[in-house]
Image 1 (cartoon, helix red, strand yellow):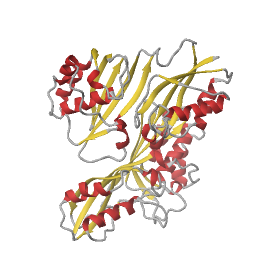
Image 2 (cartoon, one colour; image 1 turned 45 degrees about the vertical axis):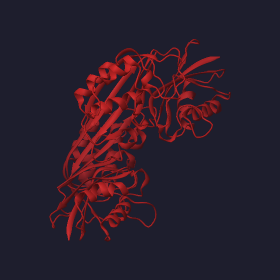
Image 3 (cartoon, helix red, strand yellow; image 1 turned 135 degrees about the horizontal axis):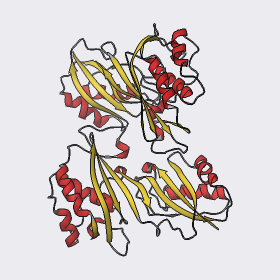
Image 4 (tube, helix red, strand yellow; image 1 turned 90 degrees about the vertical axis):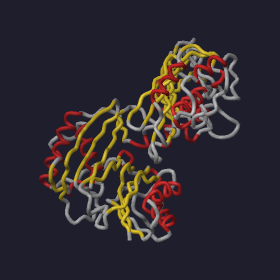
Length: 243
Length: 243
């Protein structure tokens, strides 16, 4: 048996999310179907984690086991020829037998894109959250800094989250602008269900002046109140998984 | 009668092009339908020019006449509420009666995006032409410089082009890279049918080493041979029309 590691890019617009569901088209389902056809054996992939419906990825990472002796090009070029246009394998490599896409991961980098504009943009809309007024950058950066470190992120997980512990570490959270775009780059050890989108939702409330910058520190210290706003999925992109 | 100038952004993927056709959905058709509904009078828009099926625009400019006394917000926010997601009015302003989107234009800026990568990218594919190997930048820049100035662009128009004269002026053609992306920014007085895409097709042949950099100067001087390659439409974007 060989262990193969794939890095996958996808446009999440059309999918019910990463994970196979009873209904709808999932990224995992599309990939397993093609890997099974190419390798000639049933393939189950293990991912570094799940992404919600509508979330994009530039660097989702998975592994799978296969008895197939095919060259690596079959798992990149060959698989890409059969995958739909909105999914692609960026790299395929043989990994040590102990490699595990989820348990071996040391961290992940997510980017959330906000577009600050009075008018909508057809070319940008599928990849950002549009806000009509510019956010208060200073308030945003003060609040963002409070996320960094080891904290109990219980207020930043959605009700469907089944994680046993809600303690996670955020390595960094940077706020950068480029014209009317604002990028929130979050790097951390791991993330609860909807965690990044709820962090962004809370930061936006602060950036809009509806909440004070110290709200984040208070929520993390007191474990409440739960975040009120979950930023929409199309602004989120899983950039990279670190091993 | 008022003369109103609109700047329009659209994702060209779904359309048969700018112009109304016997079959298929056109950007012009969608806009005229909504402007007619909002103003309560039949509206015909005059554009700065046409774009082919699949070509995008960040700054297509049009004008129209209307007896309507509605405030400008009706022609931006109001119209945007009724337009499909892939078209938006970015600005609406009253123009002098003599303003003409096509005849008043002093020039246009087109950007063509090339993505240099062995593997395809689902997130970038709708907005670029992917080439497997990096182009020779020096050859590309030498050839690009030959386009600048007043020339007879007869070799760079498609067979369906009905323009009376094929003399045009290119103000500038810059070649810039950003990681694995390559941007060709073309500014000129006006463009023949498929002209930018045929210029890019010829530049790519040169950048791939299949033709010499002096081919462009020869084609412009001799009026032949016609460009062999028309770059695909999704890499092209009409950025701005200058007045």
